Image (cartoon, rainbow, N blue to C red; front, side, top):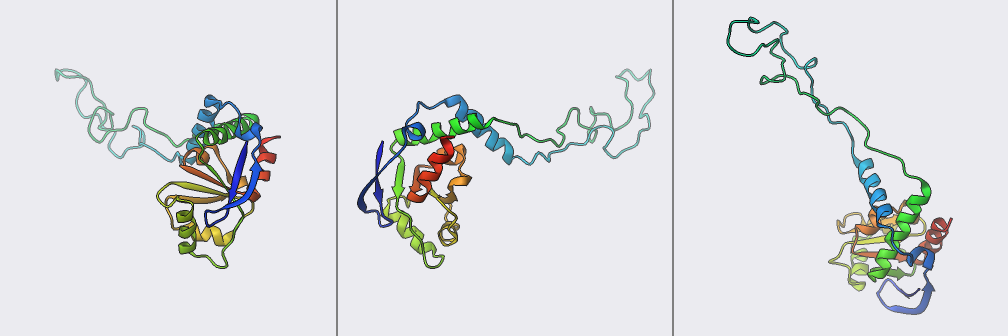
Length: 209
């Protein structure tokens, strides 16, 4: 499929690029997308949750009443989980939520995400640009020119560009990453995907392996 190339002023440069059908035109595999997004979100979890169990809460281990003759249930120490201030039964323990996925499935998931965005016509190809110094106002002007100032957007660079990255860092609705940092979650968690020309070859090369 073809896509026209825009400049950072939002104007058509008159050039077009060919987007690989093997990356941007496949039939999306929803289950692969689900697994990759699930893994991404699982990896964000710290897993440091912890509840004190019976052996860990502070308190006396003295038997609080005699075994028989009270007319109520038997009771041991005040650390019994049935009592206020007692331990927690089967409470959460520190753990890792991460799990493994093979590389071919993750590539399929990213290609599926790109294809979904392409079918929705939410991909913009932008010629490479740079700022002399970090300037948030300049980046906002680029967003306005592309009519993305009120939308969530993801800019994908071919190589790291410190000035462009720093210019966007204060904007909640916009994110700038390099092609090597792309994830299925990032692709889907945006209204418009802005691919700079320098990133296209790297993306297609990486996902065509």
